[in-house]
Image (cartoon, rainbow over all chains, first blue to last red; front, side, top):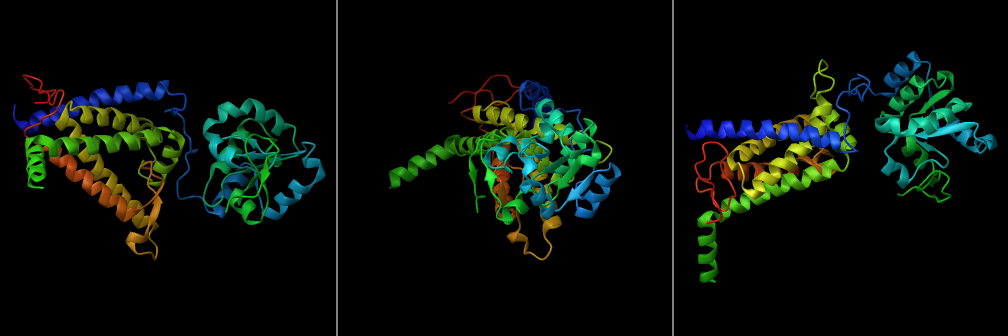
Length: 189
Length: 173
């Protein structure tokens, strides 16, 4: 067998061994991905301007909320009594670094971990505000859709599209660590 | 000084250069794969930004994000140990060509009015936001080293350099 054929065959053997092993490793990894899940709801990566997000959410009866309205809910005394719920749709690590005070964590990509706690709270809230980092992140939209599928009434569901970026740019505080940890701080510069 | 040079020449001449290349390429892939494995969802989201998966294969991206880092870990470890050296070197060379093409394509999408070498973005390489030219230069160096390993005839300091057609395993002679 000549050297080129031998190398190509070795390449094929390596790939044939590596792929099943990688599949097994992913399956055994608690942080592994679900291969059959459509994580992005079939939407195109480029379709995330505010207008496109608004149009997609409107089809499900979910609305976009601007910063002034979010601030109104946050400062409303009944927020502390649980009438409104803020949902942070980012990863747990990002949430721990800082979230809107009192917000629940519900990461779209790990929604099965949080649904049991978060869905009943959302179902009993007057308004549910979902946010992510802001900018062009669309995790808030995806989490709002998850909550919609978990039968949270769409008329109560809102996406704060400015997200934590806008929250911080307006000088609002964040809470570090777990929900209601009391560790309130300024946003990092 | 000349004794040091002679030692270095003797080391590199005796397969030391190929050994160093193997360790650098295998080690780099191994290290970057471990960084990707720390946040599989983050890696999936970054891969999506490349917009490479066709619409009729919605789960292709999941497979790439889930399998690629583990394949890199396994093949990186094999290359470091000197097992199936050419097969792994060819795999890494092919991956580096593909990664570099994807990197250029994404950078051009992001370019707008910026000079090409001023573009920075999270390439999904496990290193966070990187400068595109710097990353391409890194890939070029790794590609050259992969080719060096691929075309190394001596294949010394290897546990089992050939899986196919090998009559005898070569050890660190």
